Length: 480
Ligand SMILES: Cc1ncc(COP(=O)(O)O)c(C=O)c1O
Image (cartoon, rainbow, N blue to C red; front, side, top):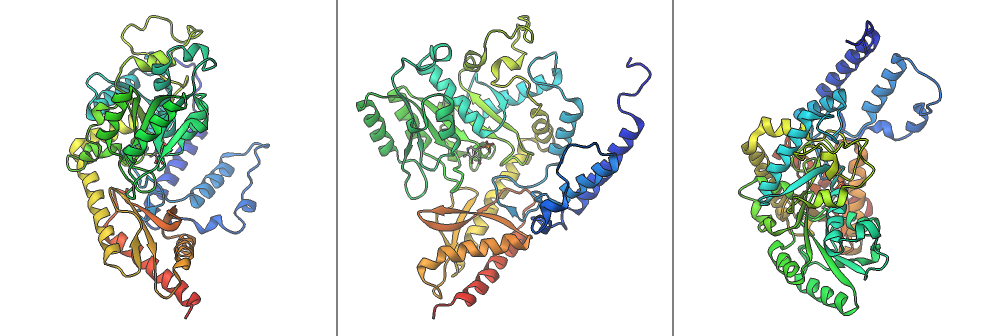
C-alpha cells in the first residue's frame, strides 16, 4: 500500500525501542527518584545544549531525553503535593501514546471516527452526572479555556448579535465571580471584550465561600450604574482553599436576574463521582455550564478538560463560522463533526485516556479512589489539629489543607517567615514538593491530597519532615 519503503525506517524503530526501554526504566525508578531533581540547581542551564541549529543523531537525542527525564519534576510521587494534580496513570499514559501514534484530529468524524464516538460517550456521561438531561459539551485545552467558553456562551445569550457585531454599541456587560475564583475568569474578561474591570470579585466568608448577600449587593450596584450583569461563575473547589460556593443560593439569584450560571468545577467537579461527597455540588443541574478537569482529581495526565452546556445548541451557535467548507463539507447530518462545536480547529484526542481509565476503574473504582482521598485529607487535618506546631488557616472542606507553622518561640510576625522558609528548605532537599499560599496575609503551606497512591505513611513523613526543618529554623532564630 505504501510502496516498498517502510514509513518508519528500521533505525527509527530501533530508536523507538531504545526509548521505550528508557521509559520502562524511568517508570521502574520513579519510586526511588527525588520529587525535585537536584540537577536543576547549579549549572543546569550550561550543562545542556539547548540550541536547535545543527542536526543531531539518535545517540545525541537519547542523551537529551535522559537529561530531560533526570531533571523533570517527579509528579508521580505521592510526595508531590504541589499542584492540583499528582500521580501517574497507566491508562492515561497508554492513552497519550495512542493519541500520539495515531495523530488523529477531532474536527471531523472522518478524521477521528472512534475518537469522535468516545468523546461523545464521555460528554453524554459527564453531562448526565452533572444533571443536564439533554446537555452537550466538548473537550477543551484546559479549565481556563472552559471558563472562557462558558463566558462566550453567556455573552451570546445576553447579546446574540455580539458574535457578528462585537460589543461596540452594547451597554457595559459585567460578570461576577468570588475573590477566591481562578484567575482565568479575569483573563476571560479581556478575551471576550468586556475588560478585566468588569469581572467583579465578590468577597467570601472566612471559609472561602462566595457571600451571596454581597453578590446581590454588587448586582444591584452594577444595575444602578447602568451596567448589564450577565454572568455569575461559582467555584466548586477553589484553587487555594478547596471551598465550594453555595450553588443553590447562587442559582436562585441567577434565575431572579436572568443571569448565566456557570460552575467552575475544574478542581472539584470530580466529587460528583462520589455518593458521599457529591452533596458539595448539590444543585449542579440548575447551572447553565460546567467546567470539569479530569487531569486533576481523576488522575489523568494533563490536559483532560471538558466544558459542559445545559443547552445542547449553544456550542455550535458560538463556535460555528463561515469559510470552513474546505473542512466541513456540509454533509454532517448526525452532528458527528465535533469541530463545529469547538473554539479550536485541529484538536488532539484527549478523550481516549479518560475513556480507557474510566473503562478500567468503572464508576465504582473512581468513587472509591475519591472517597479515599477525602479520608486521607481528614487524616492530615487530624494531625494538624493535634499538633502544637501547626495551625489550620482555613477549614478543610475537601482536599486542600492550608496550615501555618506557629511557635511561641518566635514572634507572631515571624510565623510567615518560618512557614515560608520551612517550605523552601523542604523543597530544596528534593524529597517532597508542596506549595504555599497567602491567606489573609498569613503564609500557609497548601497541602493537596490528590495522588491515588498516597498512604497515611507518606503523610506521616511529610509532617515529620516539616516539623524537623521548622525546629531547626526556630533554633537558629530564637528571640529569647
Ligand atoms: C478552580 C480552578 N479553575 C480553573 C483552573 C484552570 O485550569 P487549567 O490549569 O486546566 O487551565 C484551575 C487550575 O488550577 C482551578 O484551580
